[in-house]
Image (tube, rainbow, N blue to C red; front, side, top):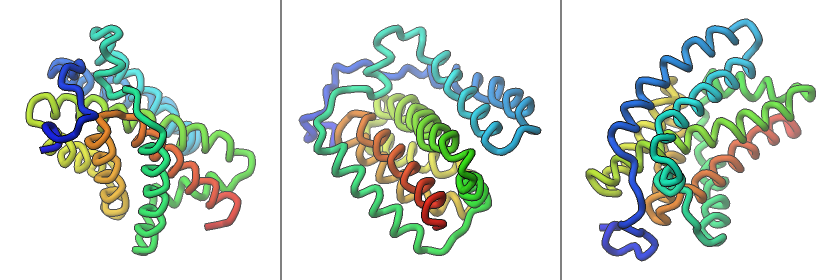
Length: 218
C-alpha cells in the first residue's frame, strides 16, 4: 500500500471532512447554474469563465471553515522540483499519444477554434490553462481525493477521483481522451501527497494544447 511505503506521505496532515464535500456538492449547482445562465449570450469563453469562477467559489465556501488547515488539506504541500518537471514532461507525452486516437470532442473543438482567434488567445490561456486546471485539481484531487483518502485509503482515492474527473467531461469522446490523463494526475497526487505536480502538469498541458492550436493550427 502506498500509504505505508511512500515516505513522502505524512499521516498527520489535516484531511478533508465529509461536511466539506457535502457543502461543495450543494454549492456547485447553486452557484454554477445561474452563473452560466447569465453568461450564456456572451460566447464560449464567457460561459467557461462563469462556470469555473462559480466552481472556485464553491470550493472556497466548502473549505473556508477549515481555516489555514484548508491549504495542506487540499494538497498544497511542499514537494521537490523533480516530480513537477518529470510529471509535466510525462503528461505532455501522454497527451500527444492520446490525441492520436482520433477522437474529436465537440467541446474541445470549440475551445480550439476560439483559441485560434488572436484577440482571444490571452483570455483562452488564462481561462483554459489557468483557471480551469486550478478548479478541476481543487475539486477532484483536492477535495474529493482528500476526503476519500482519509476514509478508504489512497488507492480508492486515486481510482475514484480519476473516474469522477473523466466523467465530469460528460461527452463520451472527451471522457475517453481525458481518462488516461486523469489517472496519471491522480497517480502524481498519490505518489507525492501533493497537489502541485498534477496542478502544474495539468496547466502546462492545457496551455501547450491551446498554444499549438493557435500558433500551429493543430
